[in-house]
Length: 602
Image 1 (cartoon, rainbow, N blue to C red):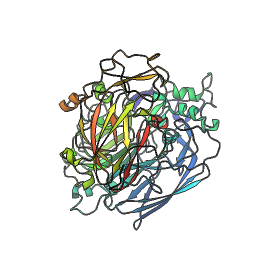
Image 2: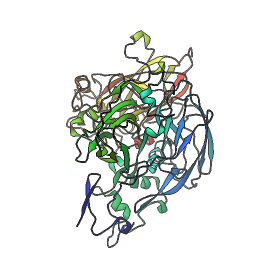
Image 3: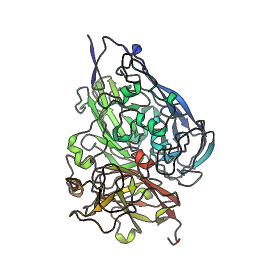
Image 4: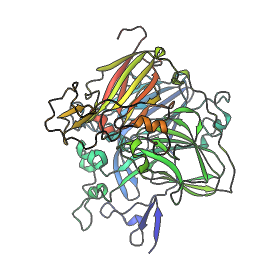
């Protein structure tokens, strides 16, 4: 009997080979296909003209066929490659059929309606650009026109559906693709060592990696795909419960979603644990996207034993599409990508051999990460050929544009607007669920620097908060002196806010009816002290951002208080704020602010 080790799991293969497996006789997956990148759409003469067809398509991984909602029948969707100043003319055609679950706001609904969000692009949130409240129903189409600013940051972004009620379902179905805004080819703007491994002239040294939760069947956090299909009342022909296992009462759906032995994988460019071959000593630029709404990734390159790979160097150069001040070592030898986050790496492996790109979640980071879904597993196999080299990675990076400059040293007089985003249990922001696209909770003047504070009263859940239109800079983690929230075990009502001494707060929320029926926690203040741990740094702080780093999504752990700043640059209109655990967003953990022209009275 032969045992083979793949993706850190040993499988017995003497009795059943992959081609003998079926929907009635499932078996473990093998993985290891040759790496490939998604199809690419490239702007020509300043314009990218494309059409995205939303359609059902068979998506096959070895013996398992999944019927999924896709863009153009591809998982992942095609990559857009654009430049500063380009115009993107996109026709979104919805070929899905009419029958679908319909509910009011803040419920799982509209599995066959859709729209599009260009995640991370610095672009208008109004029509016909990145308005996520557009509704493209079955059999309908919509024309998007995106004008990429002449001063837009080069970087790694992505696109996905954002229709309130079906965002999680469609993103986890596989509807996501990468967007690349190319670097300026002028070496006085982009350092030559970076141009040598990047588009536009050296695209062959880029490694584009779209990590998707397309095979997340186990129902962690109510985000397993089987559970989503149940919630959406999806058509039986698209599900796996029609297949009964040989000799058992269970269905394939039961097997896939089993909590103990079920299937819970990210795919990498639509494949399981593909194999990428590179030459020793050759620097590569990795573009990494966590294209989902569930689990965080903690990325590192290991050797075959799972230890940190000494033969490979990794330097982080960008976070969420924005360059860092200089290339830096990974924090605790890992890079955190919460759902929707991106990172750019420069990678060189000087020692030939076999390595793995893995997500490795360590218990030492539990306090900084808080309770959030963290995924362990292999994403990519790396085979390094050639002879030993001594190539080093340079640290110089392009200067950032003024609107993503450094706001840390600004005086309080130079900061114009201040706003608090308060996170609460049961998918609430500022003690409310989402009301409407025009129920603005705050208005900011164009051209001003804003100072916002994100606080989390939910003492049992971390939330990755995403803000549209403008990237924000992390300024500080502050002492948390605010309330904590307690609820019943099964519903948002009753729910009450308590001071840290245990007394009931005077100011409550719209559903407050008293404290009868509330389940009190044994240790609601467990996660206090983020400010001290962040300031001390070192072991156990992977969940925290460094001061000065720009993001468009940030993990907010329980009982935390984080100051961010951003410039309300260029674009007036709606700014959407929401949790990127996408079932939370679908259920109402979203609100809107508005940027108004200078001089307009709020």
